[in-house]
Image (cartoon, rainbow, N blue to C red):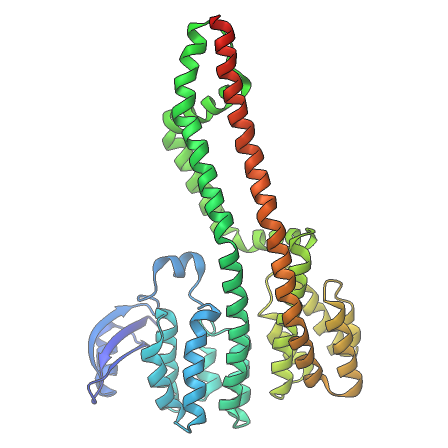
Length: 402
């Protein structure tokens, strides 16, 4: 059946947004009328309000920074003993992400219609991460939803802070790359066309570097449509093959000397945080690993955790199965082993997360401290070679003239 997203005014005059399933637009309008809602906008498709680049390229799942304020408000309201449906109504208006706002509205309506929280979240697994949905369900069953939301806030804040640090540290390399491209563009499109006629007049052969830059210029100017078509085709291929390519890239980054240590610590921290939250919420180690697996990037981590989960289901201990993951941080592996042997896995995972959080940030700072000068050196050498070659060509012209 078709899905519809809507914006409507309820009986109290408040604006509400959500999604529903109906055979036709008329049936959708009748369903809204039965709920006492006056629609102001009705569109086919639950993602109608989501920007196309999120639906088709990036996915509609919000980032931790987008989820964080919603769960901060939700935890505060639940601690104040506000009913869950009323709390969701409040945070729905606060959510900036269109997909998240629609998902919250739909979850609230399902709860008001008698569905359980697990059923409501299961229908929106494309918006709410599996690890968060599992925690919310466990908190709802154990009547500790407010405390569970506080744990989710702590986890999301940690992830958002790390992401913000990475973005801020990459500002300078991005600016440097942009300036380098600007210099190369000036050389290719302005200086090269000025120098080549002089060589032709002097009946001299231009240097190979100038010939190469001239070939690039001709390809971009004379065959611009073909180049644009190739770029679009390459972009489409990247979108279609982004998952396998992301896995290959992740394997390469883990093996690299600069990014490898940071990624191992960061993903070990994420695994300890997620597994610890699941275990402390009452989940078994197998279910906790399955939920934590969804938070890992596609590639070696998910494959290793899937193998570990299979081994535990076959009778192996948690410490034995986890200890075989070669890229798991040694400190995390030892603390997991100690927690498994002493039946204190939750506290040990919490201790591992707290200890590794500082180490992860220190490793990140070291990696970025090496990345920036390395990128500066590489781009400087490239631009320098081109400029020196151009200056040498100009000096050769002087020798030819005299």
